Amino acid sequence: MKKILFAAFLLLAPLAASAQKFGHFNAQEIMEAMPETATMRTELQALAKQYEDEQKRMQDELQKKSEDYQKVQADLLPNIRERREQELNELYQRFQQSMQDNQQAFQKAQMEKLQAIQDKVMTAVKKVGEEGGYVYLMDTSSGAVPFINQKLSTDVAPEIKKALGI
Image 1: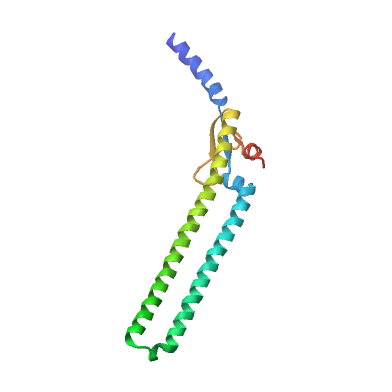
Image 2: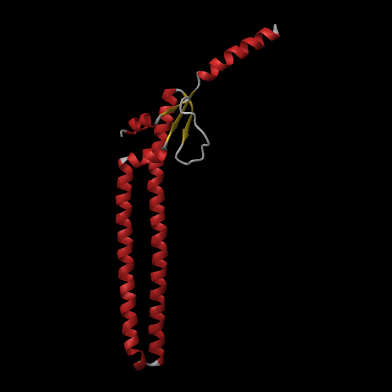
């Protein structure tokens, strides 16, 4: 009896395995096709330009004050010279801190915008996976997937794009 059940299991196992659905997609390709990605790039370019203009303004101010100081340095009293040097040093430190703050703010904005797009893609992937009855949906864009048999796996990128309205 056990042998008959085992034999029946062996005969039915390939049928059960073939009923499982596997899919793959390229998240990078999908994200590139999204209008949100173009919007993100435009917004980040504007933000970078804003930070660049601010840094240029501060750099110009620092350079002008430094040149002005260099012209009158020899004629200043020691205590006034010391105070002006301290002011220049503080201005330089503010310039350095501003550069660092702007870089961090830019990176944060970039990460937040990218995360929002990635979340939207993952929501669509989950929807397609659940509605399509897939066991696995693998992202091939990372290159970490060693092999996908194109005959046994379905490319679900068109379905994901449709779910995203692309």
